[in-house]
Length: 126
Image 1 (tube, rainbow, N blue to C red):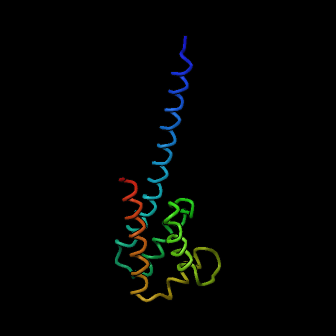
Image 2 (cartoon, rainbow, N blue to C red):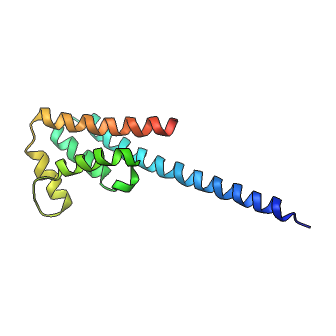
Image 3 (cartoon, one colour):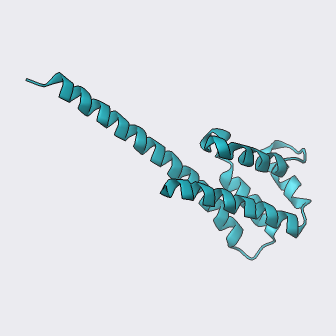
């Protein structure tokens, strides 16, 4: 005969493990997207503006809810800045905004993306 308390405890433990794995998978996806963005920034012999466009497109699947609450404002501010020039569609707005940036400004945004990756990676390791 099955001990109901033991069975219930095992199910609860299994559920907790599944929640933890889902959290890890979600974190890994976010890290993967941000790492892809950083790779876009770090590779290629093209202007920083074009690399920044590629990086933002690599991050485009991420949403506010994908970040811890205390990081969401930084993420939202980044997207608001990168899409501040009106254009047709999300991609057009990104390209239009970034095309108007100086190298120095584009590099500042690149550093912000690297910082987001660093912050998430630190939390993942903790």
